Image (cartoon, rainbow, N blue to C red; front, side):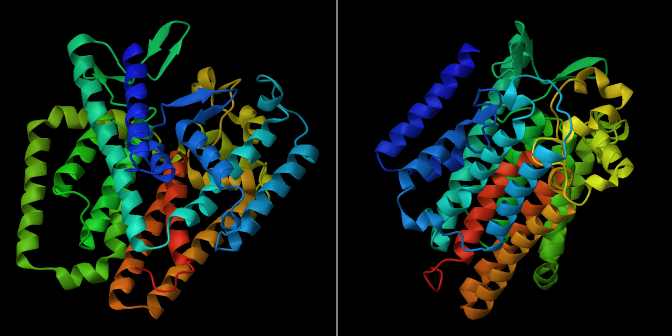
Length: 450
């Protein structure tokens, strides 16, 4: 734990030094800390480092009239619905609350959840203060990629130290003096799963899967962030694989398919013999690696994918059962933070040993939206994303060829991060950054975007 604390302290010292030298602003620090899900303080619920920076930004800019501007009016409609529906449902329709702690972990949990939701969506007006042109987008996305590079390097340091000393420098948790690490059993061996400072292995994997596809999308539109973007993407992928996270691996495949579909028209135009040969060589190389390590990959696929119900994971299963058996909760949902009070009786026997007497929500973003906000809330959430997409299309039609290319790029990124959040709720921080940045640019009052 001491090593972890020293590294976290070093990260903050470096960030502070860069801030004092005006190499990075507070919004940039916010973006950098987004994927660092192991840096948090528990005050009855986890408050992450980036949330403290977000609160600081709100306080600093509170007197600015611009902070009230969000561009997309459907955001106000969505947030208003979230607050009103959660308050009414919690006060009048949830008849009993599980006694899982103090007031803010039982009947008052919905209040804390509303506050956190408002904090999350405050990202949108804050982004408008910092993003006014396309160069700002590139500036903050580069910081996001640097963050993932640091996480990946720290992850490999963690991996090698553990394999040499059996010491996890970034343990997931310490419970009653016992250290919990990301270790799995495969081929009768203990296999260490990388987590770095990105939270649990699946949390790091989700961030890396979004990162690698996002960087690839920028590269596809001839935008490079570093001299060796390809090597950085390989770094992200290698760290992703070492997490052994089914969620991350499946999500990266899904997002890449989404990318291919969205760029299909351009891919056909760009197709040539050289690219076909390079693609085939890459596939042959991957096949050779798989064949040479056939037993390991076969065991991993069986253990991490075939032996699991990916579409119906532990936390999702009782919530799906609840919505199927009691469809009256489908239209308006159960309100923020309440679903465990209703779905606890539907917990399967095989997961009851760790799910009973705990607060849980859906792992899938779409299921979390439906279970907490209902089909109406899900529809409004889809609408606010669609409204920003339509605004991008409008700006695309009114501007130059260069701006049209930028708008196409942002449209692809918006769709990719939307799908990522629908698949895994852990992507909420990255989703809100992507959406807020793209929304700020789409509704910029500066006319033509630079």
